[in-house]
Length: 297
Image (cartoon, rainbow, N blue to C red; front, side, top):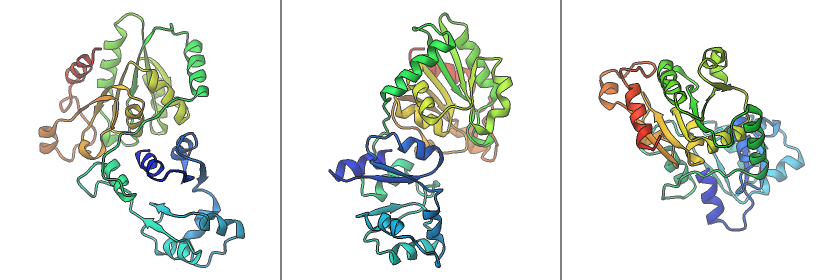
């Protein structure tokens, strides 16, 4: 998002088109900086990978209409560059995806690709329809208008970055002991099979759209999660809470924005670099509660 915001701010009057897939596409479709979105799943982009591909007139015009293309798609495939050159694209910047190959934040890396030199925080704002959906959701749950919400995201797309499930359970029970509070657990596709376990601790959602997740994050009073995409969304909407790191580097991957405290046990991780997951001996429940309390919980 900061990359798109930078391009839009430094190129007044430009019409920014974003080609993406999955949740990235869904997110881009509602960003005010973006004039048009295209799916990377379409056959048009697949053709770039084959030297013998024939493009329709409409497809050729799509690429020729661009004054400049920034691409992280197919960077290692020479066929992609050759196809774009053959189509007559004037200016193409091609870059590898960030995977921790440099000791800087991922956002700083992507901004540098497009000429940015200052780190920018992502920012997401709800539209009218998102706000209406949130009001309806709150009402259908039967939650009081002034209920305080703890939102937990115990997943991370991979077990190696996940804090011990019992830690999240302790935090849920700690919060539930208060008056007028709710606990909501967001699960991703990799955690859907765990839904029954998490329902013992609060309400569970596992099939939300990215913008529905954004809406709930914006309404949360506290957030606790791992190094994950959801945690980055939490930062973008200004959430308060804690993000727990284990094997990954916060200086490269921490969420920007909001009031999110990062917890990482550097000494433990140095002594146990190959540990899969984040044990309670690495990051304790007391540490997380202390960090939440410091935020005014």
